[in-house]
Image 1 (cartoon, chains in turn orange, blue):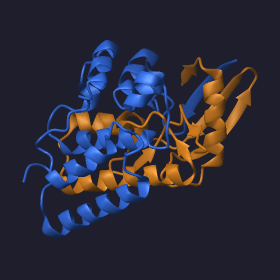
Image 2 (cartoon, rainbow over the protein chains, first blue to last red):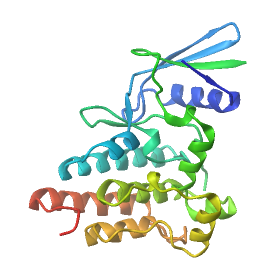
Image 3 (cartoon, chains in turn brown, orange):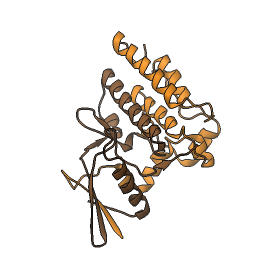
Image 4 (tube, rainbow over the protein chains, first blue to last red):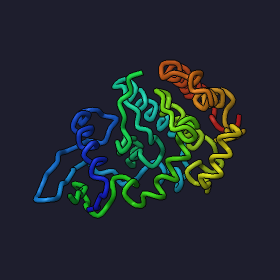
Length: 114
Length: 138
């Protein structure tokens, strides 16, 4: 359990998670609870980020391609919905032990209308 | 209002490194944002495409990943002004290096679009998979 200081930021995140909860490339949002002055967001569990994985283990070539393809898919999804994260890096991508990659942070999410 | 995030299976773990230390996160983020955003706070549709190019370097090069580089904002500023960041290592396949270079175009107007990127990268990956080539140094 972690305390967050940026209220606006997390409330925006809540809206985004709710809006995109069915998208496979994004962390699965289970729901939210408010109790008194505290709010809780509940997600599926990802134990590692891509930053953890790249920094710790040697990855086979075929798995590197698998990872890159999934990140590309996330990027395609973002652009399809006219969103940019403005913070797209290995630290915001969750990785499972089966090398499933998902976007786990909408912190600087932005709608573009160019 | 105090806000918490909890996880279903293990409340003791973080889902994102975002919450650990905001200063460290900003430092990491700055190494993946495009020069127009870092230098002029300008934003374009191609913002995340630049970041994706950086991540391709992290994934396919054996050199130190970008997130491990210890760079101050002043150092980054100089590198961006001189168009010298990020460096695309020579141990990456030339075809992939070319695609990464298009993601990392300093002129965001010329940066590769998502449709071009998808097409080029999928063709490259399909060919590599078939031929069992390595995207590291050939």
